[in-house]
Image 1 (cartoon, rainbow, N blue to C red):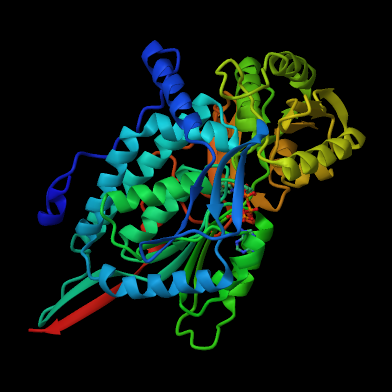
Image 2: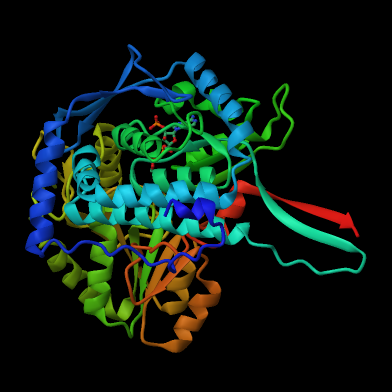
Length: 525
Ligand code: NAP
């Protein structure tokens, strides 16, 4: 792969999604068990800040703990002070002066190498996600497979943008359009796709020639520390990626408002995304540009089950979309909207299906659901469950499981009104509201009645209903007769409308444009 830098026109193999491991394969299961042991032996390590390639230990630490057993410390990451956040932005600004002059293929070569190295360490990264954020084996592996996909996909995209861009020829001039980077970016990822989103956002920014400060989620700082090390191992120069963990509420505003920050690439909640958007809009003293904000935010995703649907398939799709990774996916189904004529059958079958879901320590592959990410999430979800009990009929679940880890039962609340709190607000946990719709027309209008617009599914055999939904179901990712989660890079470019974000599509052909600007160069001949 290194030869790409020397031969910019070298053909690379077409992009292919990384296959997610099937842990029924004894070899993969054994590799995962060994990785869990290896990673366990390293738990509790200290991880420094990285500014201009320098590793800096600070007194103040972010404690990353295992949500399945909060007494187990995954790692202690140094926390950046405001001064250190400033230093990191200055370092990124200096590094930009040279990094921006590297060609797109040269930068892509680093990203290809990073993909190779991540692939070779895949089981260790999987294991870390099991411990750090409570993912099951398959969910963890899906996350890292997606991270590898982002690296492979964006590196190829960079090669595509390096090619001559089509413009209309005119006599007497030689014209070209080239893509150049923006400058220093702040990359602010969430904890829920702690590998894929953090790695995808960082890789997209730097392959385009930007330099970044990476402020990881405080719930998933260790995996980010691993990845920053990996980038340096593959030779990404010092200062291109600066690592500044720290609480969003303490250093977030400083980073976002810094006059040398050119863009912010954020994924997280609506509340934080809107705040960033607002703060970034105000020019600061010495700032020469309008900051660009790419904000991918929350969801309140619906699956419509039409009267003619295959009810068993719909029950399966809803259960997996609602309770995979404890419902902590922006694409998770949190509302099943079911036509009246099959409502009772659906609810009955769903109750039986959810009863088969196992909850417990995700390092044991027998458990489908692990813990929610932290205590404050647990409390917030339990408050929503209490609200839900007054807004509908508790069908199943509703309680905490055990008292050590942050485990919750998969919870279904039926007979919920379309405008109820639990039908409108993002809960981000294993709580599903089931809503009865009198017909398809009404189901579609209920599906569109939130402020979000991220994912949605429709189960039906009726082509007319499919056509209506194609035109009127207002979500960024619309699926038919399948679950609402599990978008593949390149296959299902991902991102939502309305309060779900700034309409970007991660893993799509437009995505890198968000990190570049086009320059037209015209020469008289
Ligand atoms: P979050 O609480 O909004 O945090 C996201 C990131 O923002 C974290 O790194 C956080 O740091 C940081 N942050 C917090 N306050 C900040 C501030 N004032 N200024 C700058 N940064 C700040 O979200 P989360 O709980 O990590 O993630 C879950 C949310 O992400 C859900 O709403 C989910 O729907 C959404 N999500 C959306 C997508 C999508 O593609 N649309 C994908 C995944 C997740 P700290 O951890 O230090 O607070």
